[in-house]
Image 1 (cartoon, rainbow, N blue to C red):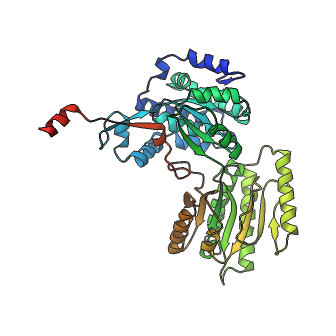
Image 2 (cartoon, one colour):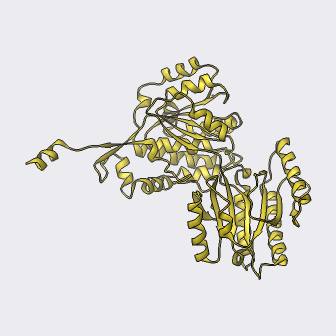
Image 3 (tube, rainbow, N blue to C red):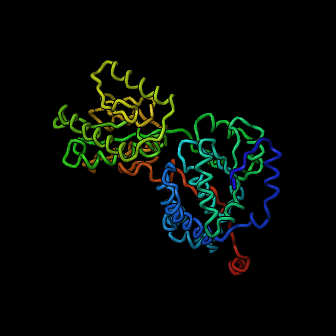
Length: 424
């Protein structure tokens, strides 16, 4: 049974909406939502879903303790009690905004569910556009969800839709039915969805196109623990096939007197061997011809440029390490292609970065330098500074914003009896 509805015209979407029962649109009980999501996470481990890109991250995200941690970070220690119906310390109820339109990107396999969960925690129901390339895996995950306690209620409350991104008539119909939106994707997608006829009260939460980089000081990459850091970096490089906004595209290495060419070749050799092993354990199933072309062109351009560039890569396009000097941040090649650039001053590199960089992955042996880098990075518009190996850990804040709070209404309640007492 297909759970994703292919929509060819606005009337088809409107018929789906009309068929949803009033009960399906009621605000669900918070603990029931947590119980369902935890059961779904556990069921994924038993289902044949191991090839779904990003599944370990989704399973971790859906666990009750993870989601309660999100609520506490955004609403304080008493947040879970508030979501169960109590007033917060300011005398406010938390209530959903209503219907949330999730325009999801196609670069991360589980992204429709990461987005949807943020709306679900607040009690909203969702309208989820699933990109064509994610339909098959999303169907498999929904089939798994349907078999869990609470799964049919979940599917009744949330509609999963697929339609061409250029179909503005259908997109407009979905927008008009929404009270909020979470928009993920590239510049064209963001600008297109922002222009849709949302109601004037709708809140739009935008997660646009960004890239990520990594930095290591000389004490780390040229030190005794370099092999551990190489594994952490390669893990971040491999996840989501380097397609996520949190995937590192450039690694900046601090140079000093001890970090000479021999040390650099030794460290890049560690990265080369780690990439080869990771590729043996987690080979790519397929690669688009256009991506292969970009990788080969990127290798050639790097090696023929001036500046003593060199590289490590296999005969296949499975992974590529491009080594040289310089602080510039070039356009990403993707396809597990990492530029490794040696610089004298890591802080100075940050002057050339801006809010187009989302995450800075760090490996530092000098805490004072790392703290300085983090402060300057925050000033430059970078929203996440995290330890290498954790660049993809999805949580709140994301892109510098809370995930759940924008999908809520904070309803002020001032009891009349209390007011009378105050006026005496």
